Length: 382
Image (cartoon, rainbow, N blue to C red; front, side):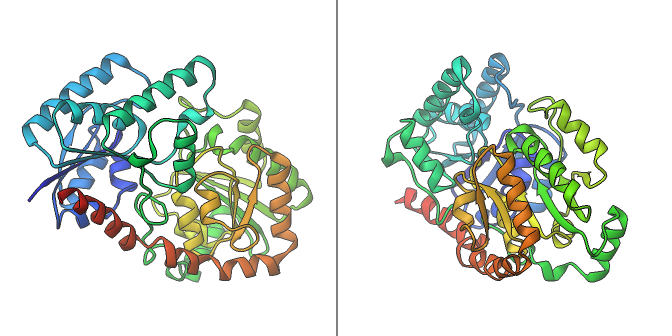
């Protein structure tokens, strides 16, 4: 059986972003997962039934550590002789594609699931652009996970069109529609969670799920909701996800509002987001940049209308006024207006619910995405 090696920078990406896909591919290829050492890497080994290998990688620019990672990957790839190396996440893409090229791996694929460089400027932007071009030059195929990302890559002239392919309708892993189903959360679970979070049945609940960082639009979201909450005392904002203050901190005034406004509830990371989605009325996701946002897929699949920023990925899953609202990026007033609209028009919210899950089922089921990726792998064999 031919070898397929999948590489991500941190092991939680290997575990979460590609959950289930490793096990599926392992029926067709001898799959090995590579990431930095950690408990999630052990979980991948146990849950997906594949082999894993640890290589230390960082998420920031660290030239000496990066060269060390390239050397370690090169040695491993020379020994294993894989047919395909497929990388995800920016740093794993750069070091993984370079190592795979040096090791003579015939098929080198890199998935693009968002571009941090789009928010950079000046000298830093020039460096990141150069790194991006270099990564693409080492790959034999680039897989943007949305059509919007494909357009950006071509506009920025990072590579030629013949090297690019979007899998299916977009997404890196599709969505497990049997898992993200509102019917699986019982009334008792919902009542218990509302009681724990001090949310009443009459409250209108907006939810954000993701990293609590500047790039996700949290400064604007918190400011917009703070203004809204003064007019609507029965509104709540749930912030579900991890902090990354060392990489992308929030403004001090945002931190202050989160602490002081009793209508804002920061829950931290939750292993199972479904009960939180089930007690909410709308997702608010004003991100600056995305690849193909899993959170929007998950919430839509659980029949939640979504307020999203007008960026690639988000504007491919959400159709304005059909299954959610699309608003301008970095616009506090637009976020507040959209939340106000959701409060004022419960009948429109209900209409959006009827169009949410069905659209996801039709376009982004996990098995469909996995089979499309497998088809791509199999074309490489011929």
